[in-house]
Length: 416
Ligand code: GAL
Image (cartoon, rainbow, N blue to C red; front, side, top):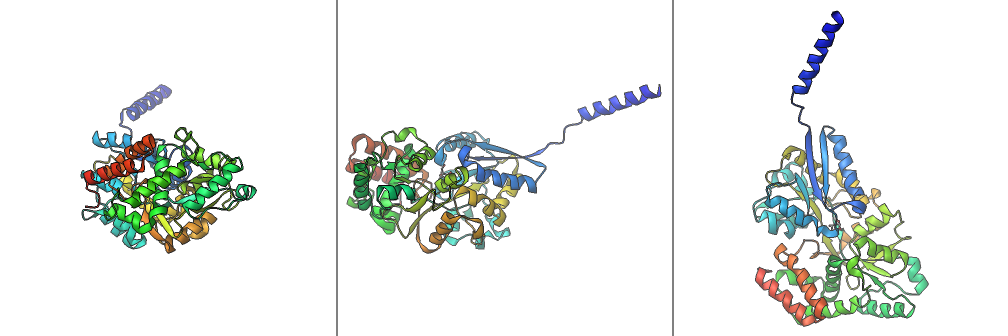
């Protein structure tokens, strides 16, 4: 009887437990395009977050596709459908300001910047890139460089060439390499990497003032100098693999590493891929130079995370943002990512030889912003630039491309 009594009691207790609403576990959903090969740096941050917040379950939503080409479309559907992730990756600058800030969908993070002391910890130029309408709109986790040319030192030695310093030199080197049996000296990938290449060509042809002039509206998109960019771009494309559109950026980098190509022009997430994923030693397994004609200029972009209005787990998202902006967070993420910290006080001993050289250039070079990665132009322009590229590729006419770019610039009021 006694045994039966305690059994009944235990059963009643168990059913009570089952009936009680499960204590809602706290969650945090972050959204980015850092999947697969791009994942290790993000994972380091998530691990740190989980350690600091053991009761919060992190949902890591990723949409694969370099440069966010696919993620942005999914994000748009979610934002418009009233189902924002708690925090999402977005390039610092116009990519966020011209879209969700303009549409009043983001929380102003100024008070967070003040309480964390970030207004002094991040460079003033970066803060102004993140600012508009009297607010600061996202937390920068890194600084990436767009204008980098990668190569394998041993291969160049074998072919008897050195990294070209101007686009003219590049074209001459390209012919030399073709003569030595390297059919496609430049490794190129899918569409957006063509725009990425274009911005390096443009910076090299126009110089930093000319480049910035395009975005201020002081140099028109159909100016003869801008037309010259397309002309040079066409010649550079003749040095690239014809199957580019079928390759991810990593596959293009692989071609260069395997010696099928001599050079690859890509942002320094390629250094993250080569050092973190492929475990190559910077300076040995791969080396780097500013893309031709751009020595002394650092074309920057920055990955950041924002807080959408209506985030379901706002407090957890604020903790995420605090971690992203912290010294520990930045120094855990960036050495793996192939980027340098956005903060001014990072511990450079944690960074490899490539990143140390990037940090030096970031301090001493002229800094300009990237078109392909959301820094300089409003979304309304950059989202249509793919069409300009298609026009160029279809007819190979610099004039047609330049005037299409001008028409879009006028339509969106670029520089106004
Ligand atoms: C960039 C982004 C980098 C890297 C790269 C390739 O736009 O800023 O962090 O992810 O795309 O996907």
